[in-house]
Image (cartoon, rainbow, N blue to C red; front, side, top):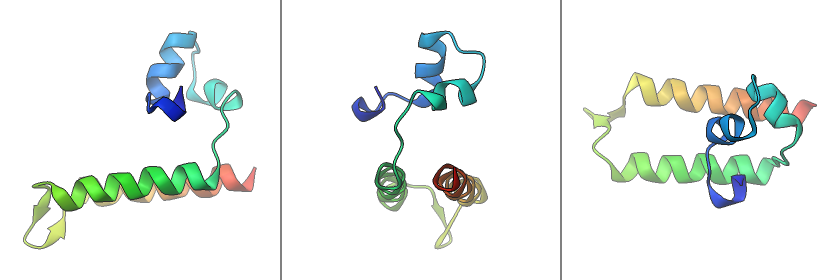
Length: 77
C-alpha cells in the first residue's frame, strides 16, 4: 500500500490499528523509501507557493525536521 502512495495513517485506519506503531511493524520502509518521500516533498515545496520571502514556512521546516527524525529512528531499529 505504501508503494501505491497510500498514506500511513490511511493504512492504519484501514487495518483497524489503534497506533501507527502497530502499522509500522508490518511495513517495509527502507532508507531509500524515506529519501524518495522527502525528495518528492521538497519538489512539491519548491514548485508551490509555500515560500515566503525566499524561505520555507516554519510549518514546512518543522515537518521536514520530524520526517528526518523518523528516518533516523527507523534506520536505528
